[in-house]
Image (spheres, rainbow, N blue to C red):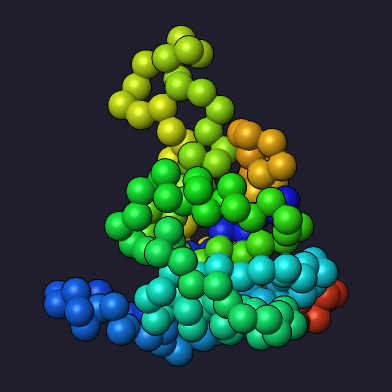
Length: 186
């Protein structure tokens, strides 16, 4: 199974009141990030069998926009396992229940989504490798709107790629311009 892990798109600044923050929606930049991610997935001919999202509004909007761009027309599954304060065990239980699908998109939040990604691709503790350090889990930075593809057919999973929306924006800008190199005429 290919698991696509997407951090929700830009949603402005965090609100101090958690009850208000839950209802925070994506902003204009977030909508552009969703379109870029959707276009990238279309270029790679990715079609999702299932989309799973955190129940928070900004994650649901991100899942919906990316799903629409990729032609996903089924219902988005909402799971508490992708909420901001969920533990790795709940995420692992969610992933275990997805065995009948080939391509699944999960949309969630920081700080737990990078931890979930690290738990999928982490092989073993660094102590067993003779390395001592503060953490034995991979540290992966996921900016808003970043997406990663992980093959989880076997554990540990294999990270195939991770794309940041700033990279997509730069590639899109280059592609839309002329492909000819500029030459001087001296």
